[in-house]
Length: 286
Image (cartoon, rainbow, N blue to C red; front, side, top):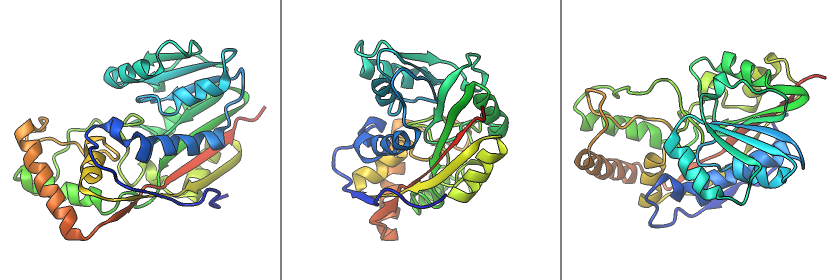
C-alpha cells in the first residue's frame, strides 16, 4: 500500500489551451487512465461513475464493459453532462448520463462505483457510505483525489491575487462546499486531508471495505502561461472566481485577474507543477 507503480510523467503545457476541455490531454485523460488501471472495469459489469463531469472516466469505462455492461454516469452540472453526451454520441448505448446528485442515487447492485477527481460532497463520509451501499457484495469502490501540495504554488498565488483584485483581505467564498468531477475539483489539499495513500487507505477501510489499496499516480506538468491560466479556468482545483459580493467576475475583471495572476506566477519562478493523484480502491465484503 502506497507504493508508486506508474513511472512519473511530465508533459509540456502546450499553447492555445482556453477551456477546461483543453486540459484533457494534459490532465483529465491521464488521471482517468490511472484510475481505470486500478479499478479494472470488466466486460458485462455494471458501473456507477460518480460526478462524471465531461466523461473522462465514464466513456472509457463504457468501452471496457462492452454492450453487455452498463455505466450510469451521474453529474449534477447539466452543462458538463451535455458535453459528455456530445462526446459519447450514439456509439455507446451502454453509457447513460444522468443529471442528479450522486449522494442520493437509488439504484443498487453495481460491480464498481468510482469517483475520480474527488469526494465532492459536504459530508464526504456519509455520501461515500451511501455510494458503498450501492455495490453488490464483492463490488469495488474507488476514489481519486489530488495528492498533497498538488499544483503548488498556483492555488496560493491565485487566492492572493484574487483577494487583491477584488479589494478584500481574504478570498471571497461563493462555493457550496462541493465540487464535481473533471472540471470542478477539490482544493489542492483534498477533502478530509485524504491526500496521501495512508490517509485514503484508512478512510476506505473505515467505510467497511477490505483488500484496500491506495497509491500515488505521479504526474508533473511543464508550466507556461497558457497552461497556468487554463488550470484556473478549467478548475483543476476549486477557487471560486467571484467578486467581494460573491458574484462571478465579469469578462473585464477576469482579464484583469489573468494579467495579475500570470505576472505573479512568472515572479514566483514556477515552471513545473505536481499534478499527481492519490487513488484508492477497496472491495465490499461478500
